[in-house]
Image 1 (cartoon, rainbow, N blue to C red):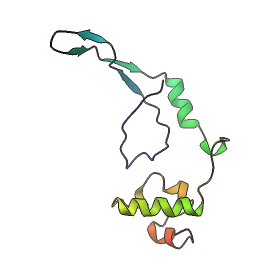
Image 2: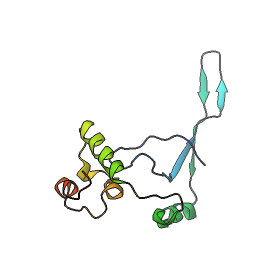
Image 3: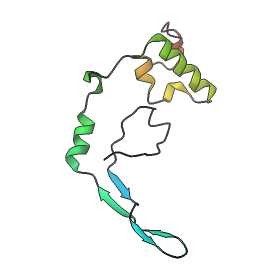
Image 4: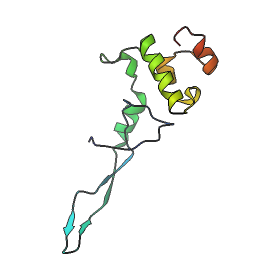
Length: 112
């Protein structure tokens, strides 16, 4: 199942694939004279799908491409512009692999 979802920008980066444990169907219901009354239902995800998502190694996908120096620079500057700390962003490892020392080691990694 695919759709649109909102995510916490501190926990998910643009382009991340999100696998929900629970989804909500809200496209069925009844139209009254005043308004649409949605029939909201919760649908649990199959446990096998959740386990497969946790086990997926995206670095081995043919569509996975390592970030270039220009990508890393743009990402870093965008986060600074948005007043977010790149040190704690979930996408940091994609743009600065092995930069465990925070923003100082990111700057010294010759990418910024």
